[in-house]
Image: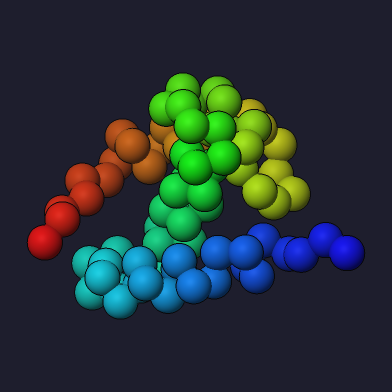
Length: 79
């Protein structure tokens, strides 16, 4: 039995939402959860490797573009 992506990182998304909820919308928080899971999986910061490790139904090229847009657009403030 395979689990769906939301089942794998629901707890992580909840923690991230509690921390960033006022500063970041839910789509970005979910992306950040996928990003962290991919970092743990590939243990590399190369965007191409991370894009392949993203869980979900999207192609790696689309995931790569999402990563690039996120890094380009967002500054993450750690409190």
